[in-house]
View 1 (tube, rainbow, N blue to C red):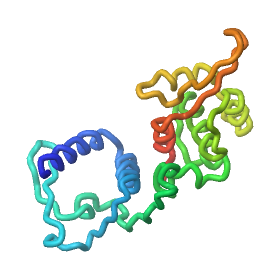
View 2 (cartoon, helix red, strand yellow):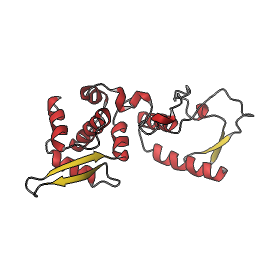
View 3 (tube, one colour):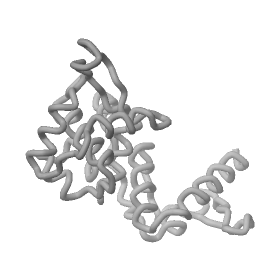
View 4 (cartoon, rainbow, N blue to C red):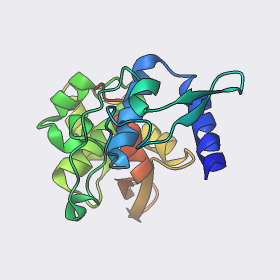
Amino acid sequence: MVKNELEALYSCYNLLSKLESQEQLRIIRWLISKLNLQINTKQSTQANPPLALLNESGATYPQSTVGDAFPDIETTPTPTIDKTEASTAQTSKSINLNSFKTLEQVFAQATPKTDSEKVLLAAAFLQTKQRWKEFGAFVVQKELKRIGKKSANITTSIKMLSTKKPALIVELQKTGDSKQSRKTYKVTAEGLEAALRMITV
């Protein structure tokens, strides 16, 4: 069990150490919420035996609580998510797409850097908010244009998102001939998570 914990800690450290501090905190908060962890930094070391975290050189040092290991994290216990809502909850309330009322609000909080990221963010929000089972490229482009964020080439952007590993958007259906075909898409679970990572807490 201890070996598994150390391996997980070392893997997490290697991945997180490559990111900026704010990115690290967002990921840690998301994991705490996703795993529904109840954290109490005031617990004694007798109640919670010390863990050993790996440092950059591979050596270990004693650590008693999550609060000591990550002093910048807000360690207020995360509210328990009801099982009936678990399938629709992507992350904590602060960065849940459903907590935004409009696409404008999402973009005000987000940091998409490329055209395809803009498309993914808009599609993820609309799919979540409108509870779409599928959508066409036209309606996403229409909404982006409405808020002044029109995609330069939405077809190319969606294709780029669908060819990523794992795919962030998948094609569900294609109707009509090749020149005038109509395609419908869906943002995958990985795509929803990627969209959430663009939103600043």
